[in-house]
Amino acid sequence: LMFTILLSALYSGTALFFHWWNAYTVLFTISRRLRILEKKIVACQERMNKRAFSDALIGKLAHAANFDFTAAQKEADTLLNSMMKGGGGGDVGDQV
Image (tube, rainbow, N blue to C red; front, side):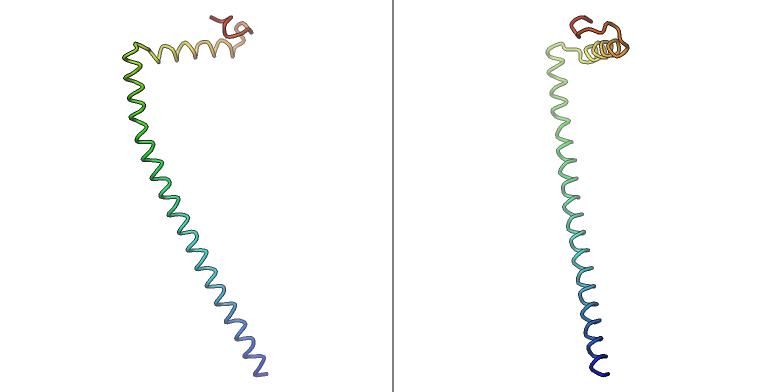
């Protein structure tokens, strides 16, 4: 009887140890992955902030070339809307 009690205590202690060890490693893995994700998000935000420079540069180049983007966008929207409503049924070149 004493042997059975000692063996069951050993088994339960081992199971408890592996349970806590597994919980610790899972929490550590999740924490590490969240830290990596946070670093990636910060890096993406920094890259998106740098993109504003290229947008400003595109705006300056369009201004220097006298290119009106909003007028071209409105014309493209008008053509697309007329094509979607079935106004002609031909090629884009037929619409112009």
